[in-house]
Amino acid sequence: MARRIQAFFGNRIRNHVDHQNSLVRGKQSRHTTRSSKRARGVPRNEQLPFVPPEDWHEPRESRANYRIIVQRSGAGHRHVLTPSEIRARLDELPEQFLEPLDVVQLSRMTRKKLSFPCYGMQWGSTIYLYPVEDCLVERFKAPPTPAQLIEARMYGGRWEQEGSGWWKLVWTEKALKDFYLNNILVHELGHLLDDRNSRSVDRERFAEWFAIQYGYRPTRRFFAQQAVIERHHKPPKPR
Image 1 (cartoon, rainbow, N blue to C red):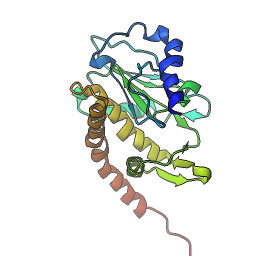
Image 2: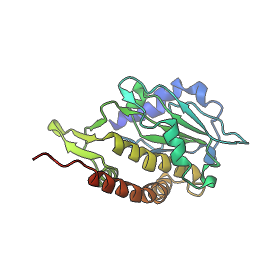
Image 3: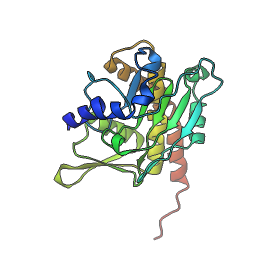
Image 4: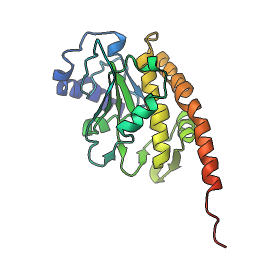
């Protein structure tokens, strides 16, 4: 598996998107730093060059507002968020947090991306959000780590073990939107704002803190209130 992922990032994609990346090779500033939110598979070899299967959006020198680009989600997949939901969530953050942001792209799922899927990625001044399976169930060959168990539980995801060593992560519509709005989106924005750290482990640590501080904690009171309202308005069971 690790060998296949090395080939995916080291050779096949570099040839396929050579024309997309030719303008940005050699730039090593925070505007060309890439980070991705918890790849759903084996971590890639960080020593290999990063050539993502994505369109590069050149950072604008003068920006009035960020753009949202919606691509077709791909067969068997669906986008989790709508542009209006993204804008509403980002509007709740301090205005200065959005100054470096140029584009939020709801990207398509392709066969190449399925080889190393992730929920989101930051590259340059763009945040990429990826679709999920139509059935809202993700399947994995390896068991979840303790951190993955905790993270899913925080946002309402449920891990279940299947036969033959397979595991599945089951979401509801509400839980998945919560996960993307208050974790993935804010996490990737944290990567964009991080102009201090260069090591991947430090950048990931900062983005995780940023997502908890500005995504998870401010919204838990709202979800607690919603739970109380739903509980009090739930119709009584028939006797």
